Amino acid sequence: MAAQKVQILVYRLQIQEGAVARAQRRVDEARSTLSQTQTEVKMIASAIKQTEDKISNAQNPIERKRQEDLLAKFKAELESQENSQQQSQTRESEAEQDLRTEQAKLNALQDQLDRLDKSLETSNR
Image (cartoon, rainbow, N blue to C red; front, side, top):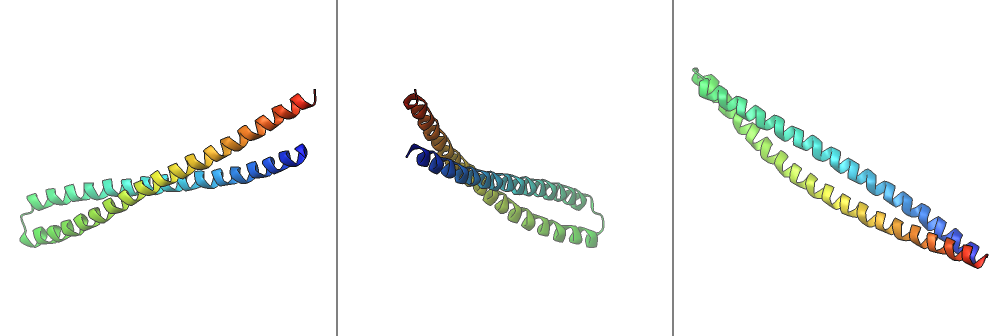
């Protein structure tokens, strides 16, 4: 009977280790996506600054208009990327919480296995 309990616990432990590994991959992917989005936000913000500088220094009205149109596009893209960044931060937080939950389940199973192991050692003496 004890051997069956051990087998069941080991099996559950293996399944839970897989769940933890999948949760960790989701965290890693969420962090990577967030990092990419943050980089894009910084690049667009820099492009906006450069474009604003070009507008303020533009002598030619046609060039000024072209830069103003470009600025409007950059600002729209920045808003879109900031929304994506917020969504990425939410996904990262959710993935981290899922990982903590799965890790807690794994820890509980490991504790159960340790207790069963100790009770078997005690009963074999």
